[in-house]
Image (cartoon, rainbow over all chains, first blue to last red):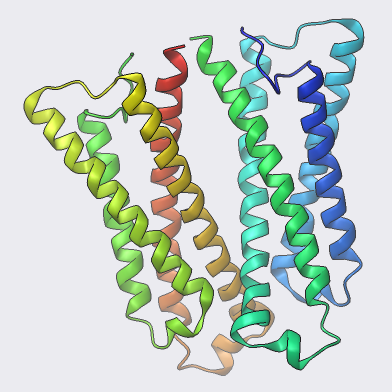
Amino acid sequence: MKSIVGSPGTASGLILRVGQCLCAASSIYTMASAHKFSDYTAFCYLIAAMGLQVLWSLGLMCLDIYSLRTKRDLQNPVIVSLFVVGDWVTATLSLAAACSSAGVVVLYAKDLDFCRMLPHHPCNTFQISIGFAFVSWFLMAMSSHVMFWLLATTY
Amino acid sequence: MKSIVGSPGTASGLILRVGQCLCAASSIYTMASAHKFSDYTAFCYLIAAMGLQVLWSLGLMCLDIYSLRTKRDLQNPVIVSLFVVGDWVTATLSLAAACSSAGVVVLYAKDLDFCRMLPHHPCNTFQISIGFAFVSWFLMAMSSHVMFWLLATTY
């Protein structure tokens, strides 16, 4: 298998995983600090999806650190197939969660104008959390494409 | 380039494109028939994303028909690279539109219970349109993965 930027067991791969973890954790922290976020199904789903992303990225981050320390090669087709499926599922769930939450925030901020009418509504906090979720999805999508490319080039 | 199920210029590729077109068009038709859909940014965005998908899939459907009739090979790296980018962008926009609309519908149907309280609210019509959008995204994601696989296997 060729080694490209973001491959498992490389420094760039590790940086991507750290970025995913940090952004997903920031999204959860910001959302959880917003008042009454649990009244909205979309925001609860965002926390669940970001939680899954933190777990997945943290696991692969540990695997990258282990691989870098022991110089063991992680790039065999079976392991990469597992990464492809996991990355794709996690990336899709993250995008779905970020977009459904963004749909609710746009409805409140633009269509119903609640953010201006109800100044205590934590619109900004929701928006920051969703922003982190989108960045986290973008980093996950990059990992997912790298893994898929690595897998496809072995065939 | 190897030819796999869903490749451009094959009967299975043509069937995928027809399915994408039909589902996206059904989603637009159902949403446009709902009363006051234009009051919601998310639903307008769904119509725009599905409109883009209809145009893209229709274009590639015509290209598939042309290729099947004239037996011309569409599988060269430059053309497939273009398909990869187009399919990925269209699939991502479709998923984003479907999820943001679903976020709004879940808010109305579950969190605020508007669908039960306001029986004239076209909740079911919105849900059917979003369902079509998800099926259309799924077919687009399949095409997108096939194209990416074809491109990666040439390197």
